[in-house]
Length: 198
Image (tube, rainbow, N blue to C red; front, top):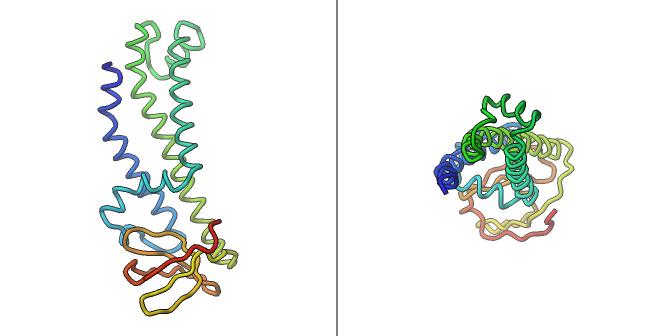
């Protein structure tokens, strides 16, 4: 029970870490486009950024779930085999004593588990930010993107656009024939119609 209480105590720190990772990913993603995203983000956007990133991308949900499951299984297998030579060697590399009680070893593994998972998540979010940022930049330069929305502005103007991203205050989009990203406040748009979901 104390083991799970210790993990629950780490959840707020875990969420704070996810917020930092979300901000880092967004900053890296928008950097090649010449946008300083923090200038266009509200506190609400910052707080919900990790949830928004995770829920908007099924692949990200699968990868994060896989990371946690993989390390829980790794931890369980390592503790179960802590009496074997290979288990002792791995635990020694983590500066853990294999001769202690398995429950004590399980508690001692929590910080190790946390560091490994934190590094894996950092690599995942940074990799996504770099990859997606370069992909959008290439699409703009080669004009290879497909318009995915029909937007109607408050002025009555209607046009097809490629929405790159949005938050609670702004839409970031591009139009065919332009290699630059346009930013418009959400209040300037009266309606959006999906025309291409891919």
